[in-house]
Length: 329
Ligand code: UDP
Image (cartoon, rainbow, N blue to C red; front, side, top):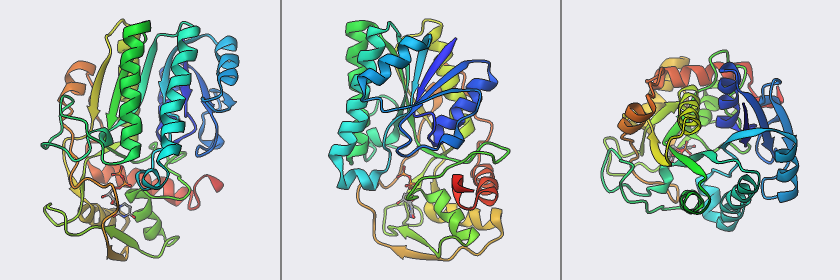
């Protein structure tokens, strides 16, 4: 059984590929390597470099490989960048989904697991956020992903392509042996930035916004370990392969940590001082995002194994120490 993984050379994609291989799936990765890393892809996976907006490229892959299902990660995912370059996000993310679904339809592949995001909810109407809450994104990244969810819904109605939208909250950590991890260029995410400061490859942490209506004035986020997230993809895939209907699930820990609490935890885990300065709010950031992930636990049987931020930061720290300059090392 071969699973196509567009974006399998990215952070979450490469960790999910590890789990797929562990579970005995045959894995075919396609990635443009615009942001992904060839070295992060397990050597047991078949790899094709190319862009999912390129229909001829996709046709070649579908013709050559016997694909049973798709786990789709290929997208841009940086909120601040999306505020400055919205059309890049609608082109690559939303446009990419259209071409991928057209190719799936023509090649009779009828299952897709999709990397969606809490950013589709925007500023939540209540906390914790439920799947049925209104989705009003506050940035083009979230909007591009919401459009992708809606496109999948109509592709199901018209063509019977079943989808599962997994709405990630904040993802962190690395595979437990530290062999692969998070490496974005430029890095914008909180945990890797804190750890770069801990390690001395960055001078200081800037905390974006200290006047939010939260416990300590900084944004509150809900962190999930990347390997737990990978497990959720495999459970969701299995469910669709077994004939499950299309649906959406929040993936979070249901516990919120403020940016200052994340910093304090990282100081404890690393034993480093980690210099910090207060900075203005970052455009597009909702104040608090915490998931209600009861549905994923009940329907998918998802049981996160690393349900605390210490584990998440400790595994990311292991990767950072082994690879101070990311995949360049
Ligand atoms: N953040 C910060 N300093 C940084 C990077 C991020 O204060 O150098 C904050 C950011 O404003 C947000 C939280 O950390 O409140 C998580 O941001 P990240 O970019 O990691 O994920 P997002 O919530 O945007 O998906």
